[in-house]
Length: 398
Image (cartoon, rainbow, N blue to C red; front, side, top):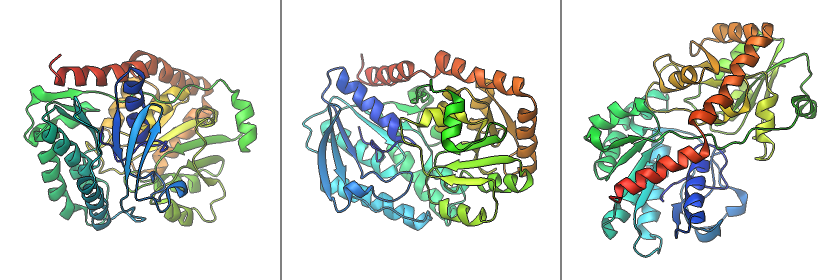
C-alpha cells in the first residue's frame, strides 16, 4: 500500500489505510506500507518523529516504511505542490525494499502517492489499484485554496496519469465516477468501494461524558469534529453561534484554519475550540453532543465526501449538514435518514435547524437512531474491508 497518511494519524484517510493494512496482515499476508511522517490533521510533524528522515517500523504485523516530506502550515497551491513534490522525490530516491509484491494499492490523495504506487506496480509488473478518497483537481477549485484555479489543470493531469495506469480504480462514492471517467478511465474499470465506520459505538452514559466535558444538561451542544481546513467552511458555525447564544458550538480538531477560527471566535462566549479527543474517548464525546455538524463551502460538490460522516452515524446523534444539496455529503445524509440538510454557508438556516431539533427531542432521537442502523446495514468495518478484498481479488484475476 502507498498512503501518505497512516497510523498514528486518527483522522481523515489514515484510519482506513491502517485498518486495510492490518486486516491484510492479520490474514497472513506479508504487508508493506509506504507512507509519510504523521502530520494530519494538525499539519505539523508528530513530535515523536522530529528529525526523522527515514524509518521502517513494525506496527500490528505491518512493515511501515516512512519517508520525510515537507508539511505546509498554510494551504496554498504552491505549498501543496511542494508537499507533493517532496513526497514524490523521497519515494523515488528511496523506495521501500519489499521484494516483488502481488499487487499495489494506493490511497488518493496524495497525487505523489498515486504516482509512486503506479511506478512500483509497473516495476514489478503487478496489478495497480488506486482508491480515490478525494479528487484533488476538483478540490483545487472547489475548496477555495489560494491559487487553486491555476493548480487544478496540473492536478487533473496528474490524476489522469495515475488513474489511466490502473488495473481497476476504486472510488468511495458514486459522485466521483463521472469525473474519473472524464479522465480517460473506462467505466467498466471503476468500482465503488464506500468507506466504513471505523469508530465503535460508545457505552458510556451521555450524562457522565457531558459532566466530564463541562456541558450542562440544559444546554444544547452542537459538535463539529475533524479537520479544520478551507473546504469545511467552519466560519458558518462561528456566525451561527453569534445568532444563537443559548447553543454551545464546539469545534474539536486541528487543521490549517484553526488559528483563524480562534481569532474569528474571540469574544463569542458560546464557541469552544478544542484539540482532538483521544481515540478511546472519541466515541463517547460524539455521543454526548445533541447534534453533530458537518459543513462544507457551497462550492464543494463532487470532490470529497467527509469521512467524519461514518463516525457521526455510529454515534447515534442527529446530523446537521450544511452542504450543497447536489453533493456527495448531502446524498449520504439523505441515504442514512440520520440528519437534516441546510443551505451551506447560511448561519440563519443552521440555527433554525438546531433550534428545531432542540425543541423536539423525539425528532432528534429518531433521526439519531437511524445512524447506527445505517452503519449496521451498509457501513460496517467487515463489509468495507470485504469490498477492498474483492477489489484486490478482481484485479488479480481471481
